[in-house]
Amino acid sequence: MNLLDPRRLDALAREYAIGTLAGGARRRFERLLRDSRAAELAVLVWQERLATLARPVPPLEPSERVWAQLEQRLFPAPAAAGRGAERWWQRLLSGRSLGGALAGMLIAVVVLREQPAWVGLEPARETLPASYVGLLHDQTGRPTLLASSRRHGRVLTVKMLQPLAVPAGSVAVLWALPNAKDGGAPFAVGRVPAQGSASVALADTSEKLFFNVARLGVSIEPATGAALPAGPSGAFVLSGDCVKLW
Amino acid sequence: MDEGNRELARLLARVALRDQAAFREVYRLTSGHLLGLAVGILERRDRAEDVLQEAFMNVWNHASGYRADVATPMTWLINIVRNKAIDKLRVGKAERAATVELDDEALALPDAPERQPQQLMDESLKRARIEACMGELSAGQRQAIALAYYQGLVHTEIAERLGAPLGTVKAWVRRGLDRLKGCLEQAGLSAA
Image (tube, rainbow over all chains, first blue to last red):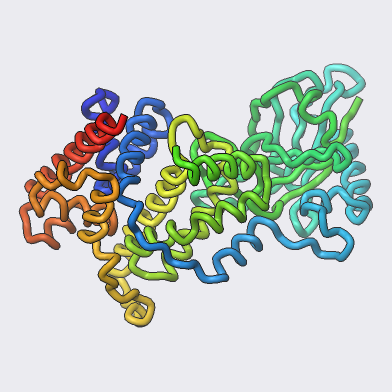
């Protein structure tokens, strides 16, 4: 059965949009929706028609807790006075974490010296190739993720040094945190595995992407198709320094 | 797009740039209406508010995915909320089949006449000026669509509620929606 046949597609889109498509058929159609622009458009047209029916629904004032919890989950309040305008990821870059940052850098360098294969850097020569390297720790300070990319490469090699707990229906996303003075918000680098190793395709060369990046973080995000979220939805479960090696 | 939707589209573009004030404004303007829709499907305020919160998490995280050229902002928001409410309703049904919730009575909302599916349907057709065109449908056809849209019921549940055979209900929904499509196109043409 060809789901993309226009008549068939319109019928499925109609039943999906109103909600009568249920169970496994609904899930299968949602998978199709992620991949097919034609399916997406067919649904959008029906949703727009059905929105006519939504208009007279009487509004209900949500209780205070809904907004309060949203704020708490999305914009955790700054911990200390005088840091009012700072975002939480900027605090990660502040002086308070500097001690940790230096320690992390040392460990990263030691790891590279002792275990170059961990980072996928095959030492063909005596010196290491110019690279960006990140070592991320969990909240108890255990080294958990090692990331590396050659300076002009477009692939980031990720190795999990210990497994990361990723709940079902969620994915672990690696974020780059540009320096605060460059005013950058975190940008998503890619998904990382819960354990083992992976190669993450980069949007550009690592030199362009990581030039201003001082820190890396991993957050747990809902698994929603192939697209990466625009920003981290919660605190980082792993974080660490991003170091440039020549 | 009307003025309200144009304003929402502008706000969503700012939310995509991580503007918290714009996000708060989108919430202020739309959360009441969206909660009303979710309550219709879930019939319980606490569960509907959970869905509303999850939906706005999505809005913050995926505002960059909103495309003003393919959907009006309100439709986009409604879809997020309805899909989440429908998913929660169906998971909840499976759970309730296995357990008994003692506080169901306390949290259930009273049946307000202005929330009855049939009334909402009639009112929306009137506002869209397609009541005459849609009036050619049978009462069963209109009821079937109203139960599917406002309460998130599936064909078997609608059949049970209306005491009609399953095949008949499927045809009612199909023909009713095709009629809605025709009436809206006709109204659009005559308005142009």
